[in-house]
Image 1 (cartoon, rainbow, N blue to C red):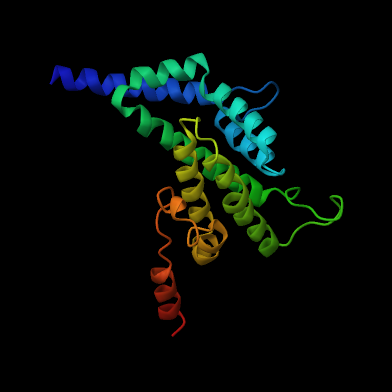
Image 2 (image 1 turned 180 degrees about the vertical axis):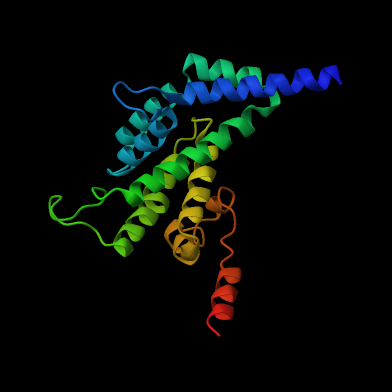
Length: 203
């Protein structure tokens, strides 16, 4: 029993340390900043270009620098065999938060030099395109980034969670039907259940 209590206390301590690393106080603001939004911002910015060798190199450099932070490395080391689960849990949560911010931000995806707001449908299209045609393809090319697969899975899951009614469009945008290598990175897009639900409610 004592061993179990010690193990539970150790896990709680690691979870608290991860929370403390991730969320930081911002001067003059009540809400805390989220360090784990940085990898998604880097990915989004560098994927917006031509995704040439230069962009890939800079993206890899910034992402490696983020994941190599001393405090983060120490936390994951102490987490032991749970380190992968811990990392992916925070990657998914932050990816979900990042895409939600993009969806809710009036300034995201403005047209005509920032003068015209996108409609909700247009913003959906842009976010899905950004995720599956830009961000995930960029991450898939960063072969020497250990965290790339976890980032891809997290980003994919977050987008599906944000727009569950658009799974068929996500599958088309991802190119998974034409690229077998993507099938190993992304879960199957099962939108048959979605269609059945829509048919049922439409009766």
